[in-house]
Amino acid sequence: MADTKRIAFSIIQFLHDQLNSGDLSSDAQESLEVAIQCLETAFGVSLEDQSLAVMQTLPELFVSATNKPETPQVQINAVPDTPTEEDIAEAERLKTDGNDQMKAENFGPAVEFYSKAIELNPRNAVYFCNRAAAYSKLGNYAGAVQDCEQAITIDPNYSKAYGRMGLALASLNKHSEAVSYYKKALELDPENDTYKSNLKIAEQKMREMPSPASSLMNNPQVQQLMSGMMSGAYGPMGATAGGGPGPNDLSGLIQAGQQFAQQMQQQNPELIEQLRSQIRSRTPSASNEEQP
Image (cartoon, rainbow, N blue to C red; front, top):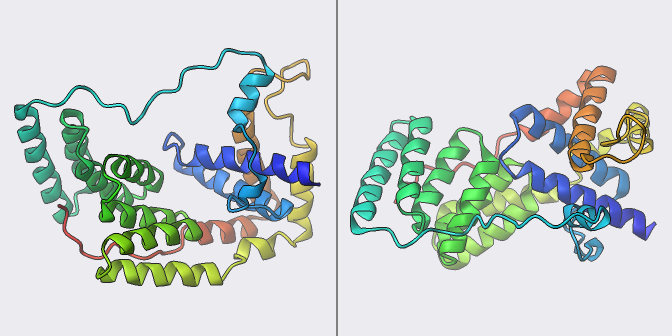
């Protein structure tokens, strides 16, 4: 049973990483969110159970098992040479334009201005943090998480980056993770009322767990669907036409999550709508804070 839980943990961790990659459509993100919640409930594990973590991630295990040379990872934190004074000045102008667009609630154009500022000066944490705020306003919470991570990497003492990370995670219903970031934000900025308020809301959400998804998993139809997915009744994950393991096993996991959500939609649309309503539920606002 312990090994089963470790396997489930690795799969959930992989799906969670894919969810936060920012490369998926909104429908695909919803499918993975539903699949993650169902797997967590079915196996009684979550990403907080770090005792179940193994030395290698699922992609690393896959590479090792197939004897393929590991592809060098792209260093997202890598930055080019120090920007020139002209680039720095132009980046500041673009940031100001982005701030003006945020005030006018033109969030799409704001993202474009911040992105151009980042291209000129990727060493400035403010640009990433501001773009994270714009992404959140557009509902792209995975993108906001990535930008906050980058801002924190550049400036580990940037309280606003932790606060906005908490907001993005809360919007993804990851309240336990949001709590830790809100606490760090308050550690750096103890008098910030927005962080205090959002922390209380996130802690309340944690106390309300288990979520409605857990109770829904007691439904016999949902349990049957889960059993079918884990036994391969809905099709092999990444198998080749001949039935053996194919080169797309990782993408197969994503497809399995999408297939599972589609099966749930067909079997009982009311259940899936309840899950989606939970995912889309309102979360603490970022207040009317000004962009730096």
